[in-house]
Length: 516
Image (cartoon, rainbow, N blue to C red; front, top):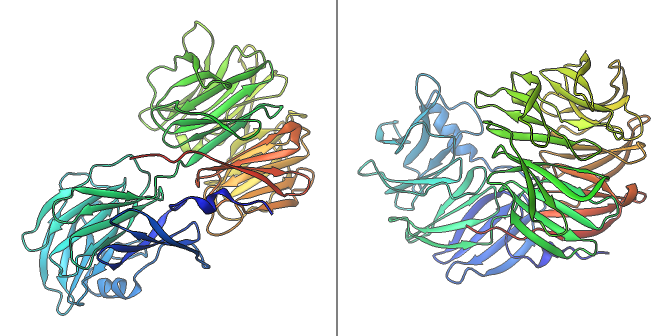
């Protein structure tokens, strides 16, 4: 059995879902990575670790929510942030303005519902509040916001004592805990790290664990001589064929969204990101040797490179939420060949293996272009999003429906569905065909304790493997070594390589943890 390198790493590899102080200087944390850990707050050392055998989800204080529903008419769902003081006297709940946006936090007496304080946020608009917590004496209230921000109020004075700026982490502050003596405030977030602050002044004390690089995309050389992964902080991680980390470098200033490679340039790695930039790097060194102008766009979500390595096609998001399909040729301005109204309805951009055709989808319509002149050849109403094209037969493609809850293998000449793929309801991502076109693999947006990578036969959509090594969603897959192995990249900061024939895990590559 292969030893999992994550066993020896201190820190969570997925969402921190609950924290509590066992004493003034000892902390216990739970995570969606399936572990419970204990920490010495003074030294920052992890002192205990064990597996957590239960479903991975946010804990909801059902008693507090029931109390809130009797006092607040706008408390309607299980994601509502509520807190009850340690003595059971006070309830804090988020409140909504008339237009439905988050307005303020109300503190009420549990007995009688009298409002003790109305706590306003330091700026407007305020993103979603996911967690609330009273200090033990109920004089302080902390709120965890998205993106990764904490606000602390004095309940008596009704004013903000301090707030932490968004610290570059991802997602929500999902849990908060005050130490018994009220001196410290701990909070955990989606990046797996736990931060400790002085409760009344906000001074940062230390971080427990480290932010996990949430990998978003993966690529490799056809021979397997290098493997690349990109994360949501925009960093590129490169390993050689024996699994040694070559380089970890900031490739984009925001989330790295997609990679593209072509056999004609075996060491050229193209990438795009939420910074609206397209770059080419030497995969042996990680050095950038070319950047293509995309124009004034918000983000580039997907890209593909023509067979000769000259032209690049990409989906670019405009600042109004719509977007364009662009072709970037050397020394020429971006050429728009299609447009779309909603970014979430834009499919991937992919060339056929011979470069003769270019596929993408916009607003439920599949577009097929000549891969050299980029003239539109035909369109097909699909009501779905294009995800991938078979490398052996440009008539066969994969489409995803809704927010990735459905997956079909289709004839993309006429839209005929050849096979329905029975996917779990967790949001498909990273769809890819094997080099011989006989297999289809994908990862998931959400894991919820299930296997995170699936492999199917393209002829009938039957499951070949359910691969469950990741402890967080794995939104990217890529076949390697001429289809003999499969790579999956996960939000747990790992790339895992699987034997396609047996489904056995061959090795795990760990991306270096981020810093604050």
